[in-house]
Each structure stands twice: as C-alpha cells, then as structure tokens.
Amino acid sequence: QSSARGRSIVNGAEKWLNLHQHKDVEECIRTLQAAGFGVWAAVPPSRSTEDAELPLDRVPFETPTALLFGSEARGVSADALSMCDGRFTVPLSGLSESLNVSVCVAVCVH
Image 1 (cartoon, one colour):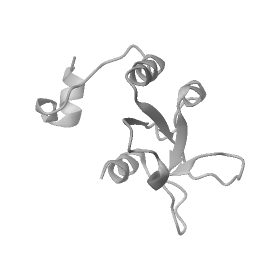
Image 2 (cartoon, helix red, strand yellow):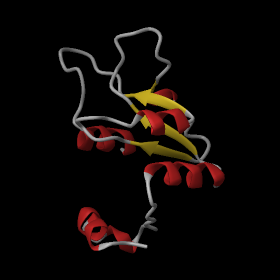
Image 3 (cartoon, helix red, strand yellow):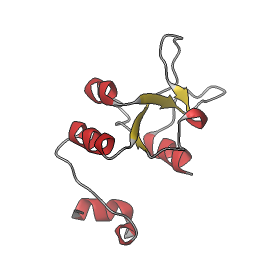
Image 4 (cartoon, one colour):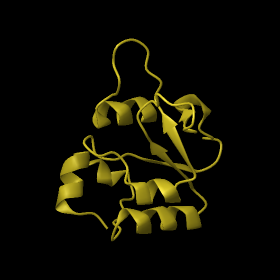
C-alpha cells in the first residue's frame, strides 16, 4: 500500500515498485526475514575492532537482501540492530567520518 508521502519520495517510481507499509521497523524486519530476506543494518565505520560490521562489498547479496538505514542523527535503533542479520558499513578513506544517509543509500544501491 502506498501513501501520498511515499509517492512524493519516489517521484512516481511506484509504477515500477511494490511499496509496503509496516506498523514499525521491528514488524518490517520480521516480515522481511519471514520472506527469506537477510536484513543488514548500515552503521558508521567503527573505530573499534570489537564491532563486527562488514564492508559493503562483503554483504551476501547472492541471497535476497534488505538494507536498513537509520536517521542521520540517531542511526538504526538498538532494538532494530539486535534483530538484523548483520551490520555493514561503507568504508571511507581520508578525513570524512561518515556519509549523509541519502548519499549512503545511493552508494549502496548503485
């Protein structure tokens, strides 16, 4: 089911996409996993060796995969992170510490 807000975000792409609405992110993750999708959460590059995020090019895209992106201010919630099959990051070199979420999505789906 699409909404006016969803239609404006995709600028008419709903003609080629199946849009789904969920009560909350947790319901969305459960639905995707039940349908056989691996759900991977985008996280900023870690400065710690304890975190187990994969670089984007190592996410297992050979199986159905959904990528979860959080808000720029808070990222993916701890509850949603705990439900995901894994975490990934877009490796950055140089001085930049992170990408804004729209740029991150564009890089990931390119």
